[in-house]
Image 1 (cartoon, rainbow, N blue to C red):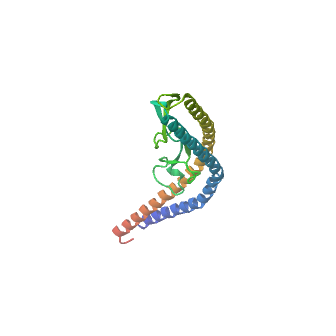
Image 2 (image 1 turned 120 degrees about the horizontal axis):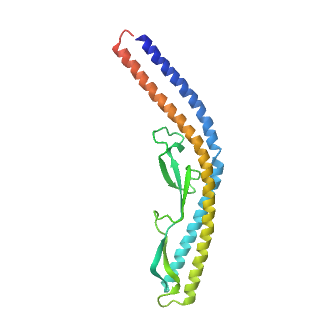
Image 3 (image 1 turned 90 degrees about the horizontal axis):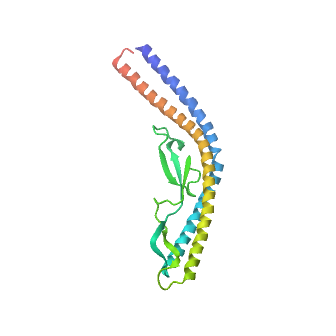
Length: 228
């Protein structure tokens, strides 16, 4: 039995040496990951700023539409709920510096905001996110009179102002889309290093668990073989 125990002890030492090596390599991988942070932060900050501008303009449209409707412009026929724009950052489990579990590709969705700049490995821009609370109503045919005391000039002016704001949103949306593409490219490259770090974490956990099992086996052998 002593030979068997020696063999198992050697396995523990080999695994421990491997764990030590991986632990020394992990900081180097983290340095590579951190190199992406400044670029990700700049891009994300710009995205958050643009989305905030879009939603501010959407709120202005709601106010204009409501004021016009209150004086007889527009109709509830064809009205639409105005939803906010939102950028979702999909953050896989492997993006965590400490994750070592069995589901590295499981995603958590977070709204990109000024408080979580740089997160995620992939971003999705939703121009009108109906999963969020509506900002208000945009009435149909707002440029025409439907009820007293409206006048044609007021309705036409309101419709024109809304159209101008909608055009501003279109320009901002294009800018967001362009930044999301760039941000996803950078974060996609960072993911390669994050996956490498996950592999290191997983290796350490697997070998640590294996050593625990081996030590339990050694003790069991000793317990059943007093002569060892």
